[in-house]
Image 1: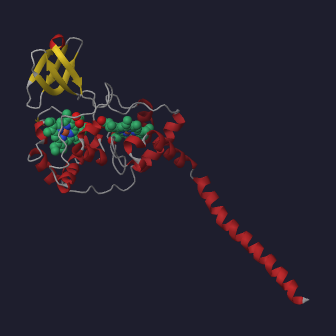
Image 2: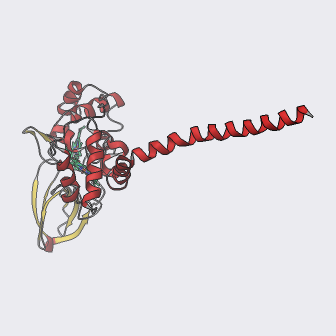
Image 3: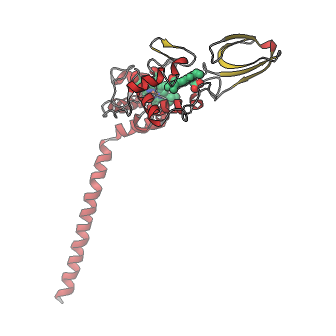
Length: 266
Ligand code: HEC
Ligand code: HEC
């Protein structure tokens, strides 16, 4: 008679301790998620609105890395909320359509990223700068601090404008970063191909265009002013670049050094 009753009570106490254990497991997770709703919300909004340009976690891409650095355009958290609501004119970053509360939540998340330890940049910037003005031939199309030729964008502060993945992509596969249509961050760097009625053919950078005239500069630096009335064919090469891809002419160490150099330009 004794044995079954001890059996029953030990089963009961086992059930009770299982119940206690499940409480112990369950309570802490509830507490954690209740403690962090603000930053989690800011992070969610960041992933939705910002990460396609700044990377998940703010590691950088078409826009600069937002991790572990002093911002050039923000000295306090409220400046960040303002940037979100206004955008940055003349750049790819247009205003984000969120409420002021949401902007504040994003700002507090981004502000917290500034205190994340900056990842050390791989590669040797000094050797990268030698490749830039030497074998890379980059200075024949890009100006840095007043030196070089301005066929492509000025790169003097490209490290503050672009993240590492974008810089690498720009060098290896230039076509990926250029205009897909008349609007966009590089719509002022559109390659055009022209065939004139007299048979002349040329390809270059569109400098200017109106209803009657097209100005272009070719890769040799020659400048043309062409009348549209005398053109047989005009092709706007959206999505194509006059910048050569360097994926096969430079090795991966050289490209890494170039990217390190460009990242240092702030
Ligand atoms: C379409 C791409 C794009 C999107 C989307 C975008 N940004 Fe940007 N952002 C950029 C670019 C490009 C720059 C660099 C502008 C420049 O200085 O030329 C930039 C700059 C910034 C800067 C300034 C960094 C500094 O050093 O001062 C902050 C902060 C920033 N973005 C935050 C955000 C946040 C937060 C969001 C989302 C609400 C966002 N961005 C969405 C492209 C983007
Ligand atoms: C024949 C001219 C030419 C040469 C040579 C050239 N580029 Fe470019 N580059 C351009 C043009 C034009 C653009 C504008 C976007 C495009 O067409 O891809 C550009 C865009 C870029 C960008 C993107 C800049 C931004 O703000 O988005 C980077 C980075 C870059 N080039 C780096 C380099 C490096 C590094 C080299 C040398 C290894 C180089 N370029 C050689 C013409 C050139």
